[in-house]
Amino acid sequence: EARCRVRLARSPWPQPVPRCHARTVRILVLGGTAWLGHAIAAAHVAAGHDVTCVARGTGVPRGATLVRGDRDGGVTALAGLEGTWDEIVDVTRIPSHAAAAAAALAERARHWTLVSTISVYRDADRPGADESAPLLEPSADPDDYGRAKVHVERTMQEALGDRLLVLRPGLIV
Image 1 (cartoon, rainbow, N blue to C red):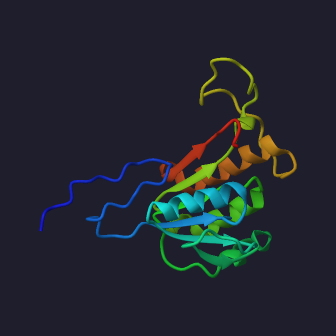
Image 2 (image 1 turned 180 degrees about the vertical axis):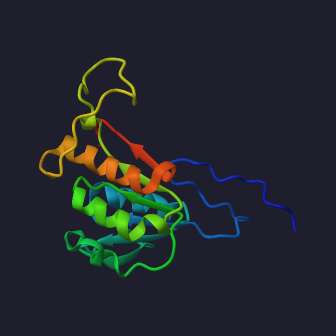
């Protein structure tokens, strides 16, 4: 049998699974029934990945598995999850949700993508600023959006180190 010469790209975007790739890529989306989480889950399903969504809602994309859980319940909301994950995707702005996810899942994730926001920057409107620009001070108050996202980023960085990718979009449409 010919050896597979296709490499999976290291990218935050879903990649098609080559037919010769022997292993299924397991994706966990924390959310997946609403707006951005649903779109992320649908893209991974379309790429041929094995997608599980943990959410309160019920409308996961066709082909994804739903595990019902309310993240306000802390680590118990994630108790129904088994095994390890190649990729976990999270969009939370709530520091307690991030802390619970890190405690329950960090050791079982090969890679983690956190969708954050440009609102974490102290001077988000400064032309030419890049990822090294100063951030806001963190806050555990989920209603203080930018500061809460800084708190979430730091929590996940401490738990995951170089297995974490933080995306900071300016506007998602």
